Length: 192
Image (cartoon, rainbow, N blue to C red):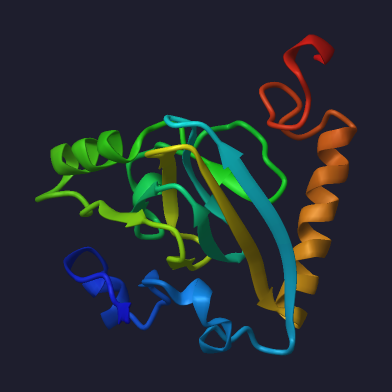
């Protein structure tokens, strides 16, 4: 059964932007998960022990995350949440944008600047659950138990082609040391 996140994403829904959704047990019936035939796909496997975590970031492509083994917690914030509090990290990553803050720190700082910050949407995945995270949605992830998750990054082919050209130019500048060479996710500190 598909469930849609509620209070934390209602503003995004009203604005017509894509919102995260979760489908409980969908891994057992893949025909229900449709990827447009013009989408470009890239797959990743995330395998880790209890407590393994990925810091707050947003991906440049939509992501379909399928929990195969164990339990994993996603904490999501709407697009623009980190930028509004000046929390974007200068660290370089080719296909993601990183935050220097946690989800809790973003909401705390936003609450001090305005009449309340964005709600953090928490989604716990069990084996067989599928979570769609639209491009631009900030998320941090932690394993609640040893786990295996498969993710498929995708987007409409013409848009991904333009994104690929832009990011390839940015990555070439990075490899030449012009953009984000210090503190990046692709070069060990010892090499810098």
